[in-house]
Image (cartoon, one colour):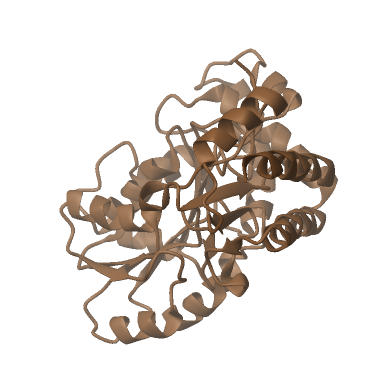
Length: 358
C-alpha cells in the first residue's frame, strides 16, 4: 500500500532517490566503493559546515547517539531533556553504565541556556547531550546560545542531535564548536531509515582515545581509521550511500540558503493554518521547529478518524501525537522534499475533513 507521509519521520522519498538507491552495489572494500565514499564527503562537510570528516554509520541515529555516550563520557553526562527523544537519551546513558544527570524541562518547552550554565557550574560533567529539534514536541532549542555557554566549560564535550533540523536550518558545526553533530537519513534528508551521519571534532577523538570500553561497532577511532582509507568499519548499507549522493546533488542544485528558506515558508504556511483554524502550537512560537509543527488538539478532533479519512480519500497521513502527547497533539511535517503545492494540498484536505468532523 502506497500513501504519502506528512509525518515527522520517515518522510516521503522521491522516485529519483529510490532509483539512485537501486544502483547495483559494489564491494565495500573495492576501489569503486572508496571512490563512492570519498565522492560524498565534500557535500556532507558542506552540509555540516565543518572541516572535520563526516562518518557514515549503518544504523539509526540512535546507534551513534548511544555510541557517542560510550566514546566520550568518562566522568558524568548531563542529558538535557524536553521531550520523548531527549528523555530517552538519559535512559540510554544509564543503560551504558554511565553516571548521568537528567536536566528536565516540561514537554513543549525549550532547553534553557541559563539553566545549563547553572548546572555545569558544579564541575561534575565532562559530556552534555542536546537534541536541537525535539521532534516529539516540535521544539527547536536555542543551540547557538547553549553552545555559547559551553565555551566557558572547555572540559565538557558536546553531542548534538540534529536529526530533524539538519538541512532545514543552518547548523555551523565548526563555528559553534560542536564536538559531535549527528543526524539520520529518514527526516529532512528525505531518504529511507537505516543510515546515520556524524561529524566528530579532534578534541572528541582525543577524549575517545582515553576511554577503554567504547566497544567496536560505534568506536570513533574505528570510524576514523577506516575513513582515512575511504571505507567504513563494517559492511555499510551501500544503497543508502548512493541515496545520499543523489540527495546531496539535489541540495546543491537547490542551494542551502534556498532550502532553508523553503522550509521556513512551508512551516509558516502550516502555522498560519493552525491559527486560522483555532488551534494552538504546543511550543512558544519563537522556539517552534521549522521542519514540523506540533499542534495542540484544542478542538478535540478524533485524530485516528481524521487520519483514516485522509488516507482513504487523499492518500496521505499526518501524525497523531507522540508518547504521552498522543491524541492531545498532532504533528504535520514540512521537511524534506515538500513544496508549497504539496503542503497547500494537505492543508486544503484537512480543511475539508475538519469541516465534516466538527
